[in-house]
Image (cartoon, rainbow, N blue to C red; front, side):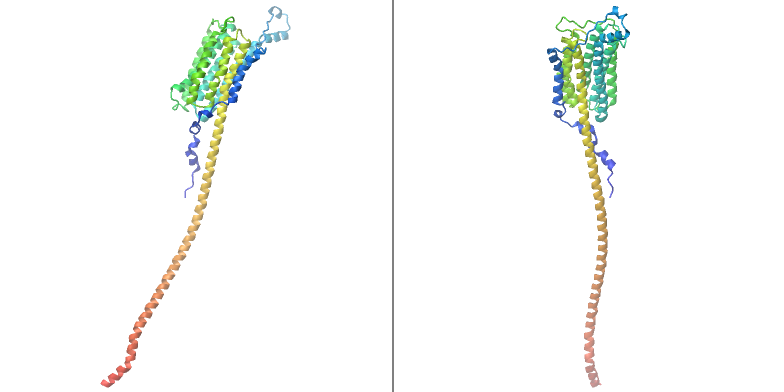
Length: 408
């Protein structure tokens, strides 16, 4: 009997294909936990409630006396300069926190792609990364770490609005690619990811170049108007339309926790734009800082969705691997049982052959005995048949002699 090839067994198992195995899923089981969605909503509302209680999140405004600065001690001057730049420091921390969240999302998207080979997650992760790169440029230009022609009063709000619009459009484009084109042929195709990354990168580069080289930027802040920052209304409408129309369709076609998190991220994105469009009247004021903080939450929601999706995938693969190991153990037990059965059958076969040989020998002896018995009967019969005429002849010899003498 041939042994079972375990390597071929493992390769032949359809359960080893995680894309097929995990792909069969119900959309109702792939959503962000309701508690997490409630926490995100509460965080978006909490700054407004705290404002009602008198809490102000604006950065401290400290005016440096340049006339007296020349006579100050260098250490005191350095401290006052830091106080003057407190708003800029806060802005930098908030922006780079959002950028780090975008980087972590992309890194995890790559890890997720290596496991499930789903191009959708990776492309959207790259779109978020490109949006984060735009936010990084916005921060670098505001901090004058890269050269920019316009002053911060126009540069920061203008590049902010451009980055937010770019964020919304990039994500919508990344999602729409898989809504209008069949992605079954693209699953696991790294070429699609590379091409999409190059396109997104070129778009981001062009936006950076245009904003950096413009000597005059449009006025974006109107403190006395109902809509204080009209340029932020367009990203607000775009995020709302994406959350109501685009993301739900994407989730229905490609159900996953990450896809659902895109819809949930609309809440902090919309709240961010509401604070900026209808509340922020100056750089580093209350609504300005709240909007930048909520943008971090908007980046963290897809990251959280991707983490949960990654954990679910890991657990699913762990269960799959355990099933494979159990199947292999079952096959090993079957193989061992078959081997033992083969040995027992071989032993019984030898016993049967020995018994058959003994039976044949007994049969030969029995046949020989029957032959001898038949021969004895035959000889007895022949002797009997010979004996009768001999006895007849012997019994009539005397009379024959008498008759012969008489005749002679």
